[in-house]
Amino acid sequence: MNKREPISTLSLAILGLISKTPSSGYDLRKVFSTTPIGAFSSSPGAVYPALRRCEKNGWIKGDIDRTSILRPRQVFQLTVAGHEALKEELSQPVTDESVIWQNGDLILRFAFMDGILTKKRILKFLEEYATATEEYIATLGAHRKTMEGMSPQCGIFALEQGIEAYKANLRWAKRTIPEFQ
Amino acid sequence: MNKREPISTLSLAILGLISKTPSSGYDLRKVFSTTPIGAFSSSPGAVYPALRRCEKNGWIKGDIDRTSILRPRQVFQLTVAGHEALKEELSQPVTDESVIWQNGDLILRFAFMDGILTKKRILKFLEEYATATEEYIATLGAHRKTMEGMSPQCGIFALEQGIEAYKANLRWAKRTIPEFQ
DNA sequence: AATTTCATGTAACCAGTTACATGATTCA
DNA sequence: TGAATCATGTAACTGGTTACATGAAATT
Image (cartoon, rainbow over all chains, first blue to last red; front, side, top):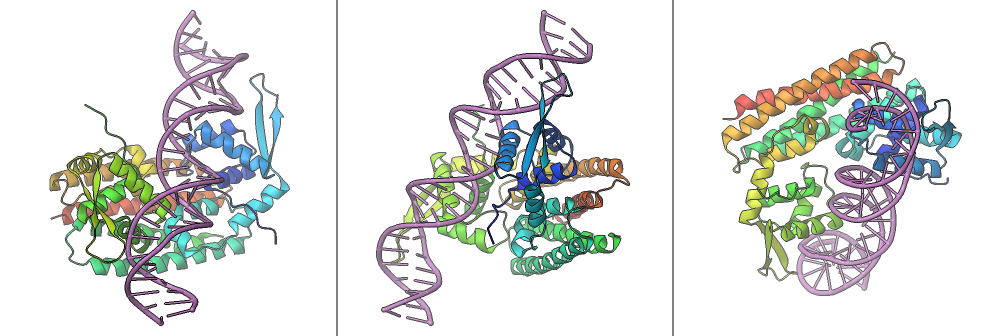
């Protein structure tokens, strides 16, 4: 009943990563700057405040690690509430809007589902994703038709780029569903 | 020699659209909310301040349109300086970073090149885009190999989604180059 | 008469960016 | 000894979001 705060993309990435491996801010920055995990800046001005926000929401808690002689690191792990919040976020339905405007967020959510959602729920996500993507491809196709023979060639080609990308997403989803053993 | 202010994504979209058709803030909001032109909010709180910024930079100037009995609209068009700024922005090289983190911006730039850059320059853009994309696909492939057989299946599948999407981008660019008559 | 559309804008808030700062440790 | 790395953080700025506000005209 009580409404949960929305989780920002960066917070979702942080919660997702921490759910796999307890990490310090520095660890997270390294992941963001060395892996293709998403469009995240590894800037301290983004990561540390985001960690504080997650902490304030009770999603993570930090333990000081003094095993090294180096400056002590604060290693964060998920709280029970954090696990709940992450699970709920990952369980959100795939909306048409999210497929159109937040495809990256959807894939980020998918990347963290392992071990948090059941196989059934993950497959449901992929099916919803495929359906919504297929619909949007049709919409883009209709749009393309209205531009038929129009003067700004580049605009049409750009639209085709979008259509091709979404078609690739659709093929990926359809192929991944059966591969998901 | 004098350094031009960087153009934000929203400003670029506004300049690009206005370069095709002089428009009011309301016109632009309608385009953003009814066409797949990009991830832009059509919110007045974004569009009107962005117009003011462009105006302050001397890129656009507005004329009051009183032809209608309705509330007068302020119709903006590009200034000479605005055309220069847009042309320079569209002429920026395709960097590896932009292919990775700002693919949407690159496609947006491409969509507006018609009539502003020469055919030769547009083709150069597509070739640079293809090269950088191909390189990044290789990087992602290497990354994928390091995850071979790892436990979080979803993470690997998510990476594959990215690889497939970039492959689609590459095919699009390679196909579009010769189609560009 | 009430709602929708045309058309513009402001204000509070939030979050990311760049740049700076600190200070210890390790490496060349 | 100087540079790079470990590790955390702050401050100023920018720009986008949501929500609110106005007011006239057209539509139902």
